[in-house]
Structures are given as structure tokens and as C-alpha cells.
View 1 (cartoon, protein in one colour):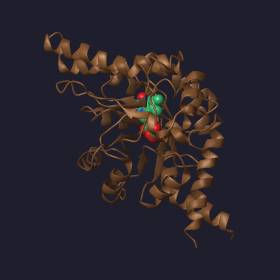
View 2: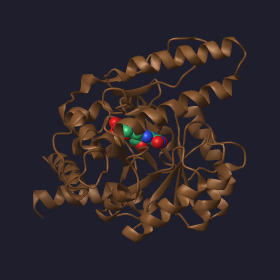
View 3: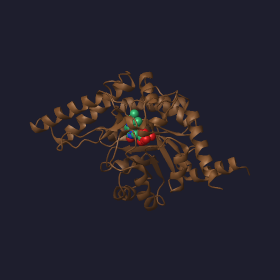
View 4: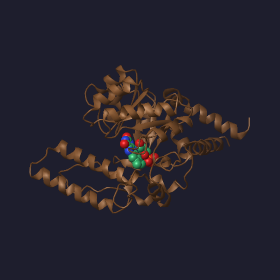
Length: 342
Ligand SMILES: Cc1cc2nc3c(=O)[nH]c(=O)nc-3n(C[C@H](O)[C@H](O)[C@H](O)COP(=O)(O)O)c2cc1C
């Protein structure tokens, strides 16, 4: 056996559990990205042997229904749907997934509300849940989550406070034997994938690395901002008012950051004046992000919109087909595992 095939065979073995769970050729998920992860990118990822996930974001059940149907027209491979737990129509969205016999539902954005896991599982779908800490991971497994995503603060979009490397060390030894765990945040190359697989991960989830895929419908100006940026340009948003606990968002620095500060002030003042309750205030912040991201991804307003991006953005150097990105990641991972032989 040549060295190259030793590496590839080792990689295949390490990814087997994740592939089995996802029904895909590789255990690489393209994490849902609002406005970016629509039918074209999702189908391209799944067709290339990865696992695409539709970002439902703030979509209505009718829109999600159309997006799933459109994706099915472009691929016969498995893909998932990402639902945000605080969506007011969560149970209707679950029903839409059930009608389409979606095989995997990814729950993001906080602890799943009562009955939601059961409702998803009743459709026959597997539940993948984001676990921000060890205690919550254990709770999610007890509640019936079939797999977990652990995502570090290097990631693009909404982030927690802990880095991927620390989460992986804390959580994989404790929970990876029970359910498949996919590691996300800051992964730009295959060497890192090999490392997390060796630590017990069943697979990985990447977002930033896939934004500039040829099939991604992100505006050319949005992609250009990614190609120009380096790791240090992807910064976390700052909370300006202690009473309004906003979830930090990692994005490329631009004038839009100032707009977010102004939005926080506006919402904090509404809280002060008793105009809104805390839950409504937080929902307003989330609506702000959805709008700002749309402005950048779809309209190409890279100055005032939100350029959500992870620290791996510096490793995004060209626009290329999803299949090539996956092939590169797999080759790098195999190469890294091959070196373990000597
Ligand atoms: C532009 C953008 C939008 C995102 N939107 C969502 C989303 O709607 N739902 C979600 O669960 N995660 C979202 N994420 C997170 C990704 O699914 C993924 O977990 C993350 O990008 C992985 O880290 P990485 O960016 O370092 O690869 C988003 C990330 C980016 C870059």
C-alpha cells in the first residue's frame, strides 16, 4: 500500500461513523449560513460528497417548503435543514420538514423548546443540536439529540465565548462515545480536520471556507471582501449595554459595526422605557442581524451590511467549486494522517 492510500484509508476509517450518520461520502458538513445556504450551495455540497444544510433563518414555513422542494430538484443526496429554536413558527417549520421527509434537522440558537426534539424525531428525522457547554451537551443527549455540533468562538456568525480547541478537549472525551460529535469553528484546512478526528470527532462543520464556492449565490462584493480579509479582520461584536445580553456575532470589520452599536442603544432605550419585554428586545436584535446579513450577502452592501465571517477567512484565497474545496480538504487531511505513519 502506498503512503497516499494509507492516509486516505485512515481518513475513511476515521470518518466512517460520521458518514454513516449523515449518509454522505465525507463527514464534512457545510454549516447553515443565512442567505448563503440556499438550494444552490446546499445541493452543490451534497452532490460533492459533503453534507449541505439549508439555513431556514427567519424564513416562513411557506418559503422553507419551497426551498426544500427546490433543493430536492438539484440533488438526490441527503441534506439537512437548520432551524433556529427561537423562531416563533418553529413547530410549523418542523411540520414542513416532516412533510418533505427531511432526514436531518439541525437545531441552533439556544436550548430547544419543550416538545421540539420529540416533534422532530416523530417525523423520522435525526436531530443534530448545538451544544455550547459540557453540561448542556449531556442534557441534550438525555433529551434525545442524535448528534451534537460543538462550535468555538473562531467561527463566523453567532458565537459563544470558548475556543474550538478548548471545547474539543473538554467535550469529546466525555460525549463522543455516546453520540457523533461534529467540531466547528476556525477550520480552514484538512490538517485541522485530521486533528479533530483523532481527538474523537465524528466529523467537522465548516462555514466560512464555503462562502466563496462558485455555486454560492453570495454577491461578488461579499465574496471579494472574504478573499481580501485576514484572520484578524474577523472580529466579535461588542455588547454596549449590560442589561441587554446580545449574543456576539463574528464578522469582518466595517461601518456596519457602528450601525449595530446604534441599534443596541435604540433597543436598550426601548427596554428602559418599558416599550418592549426582554424576549422581544432580543428578537429585535436577531431581526437586525438577519436584515444586515441580507444587505451584504444579497445586495452586496459590504459597507453597511453584516459580513459574518470566521477567523479562517484568511485561508479563503479563491473562488472555486464546492467539489474542489472538499477535495482539497480531504487531500490535506489524508496527507496529515499519512505523516502519522512515519
Ligand atoms: C455568513 C454566515 C452565516 C451564518 N448563519 C448561520 C445560521 O443561520 N445558523 C447557524 O446555525 N449557523 C450559522 N452560521 C455558522 C455556520 O453554520 C458554521 O457553524 C460556522 O460558520 C463554522 O465556523 P467557521 O465559519 O469558522 O467555518 C453562519 C456563519 C456564517 C459565516
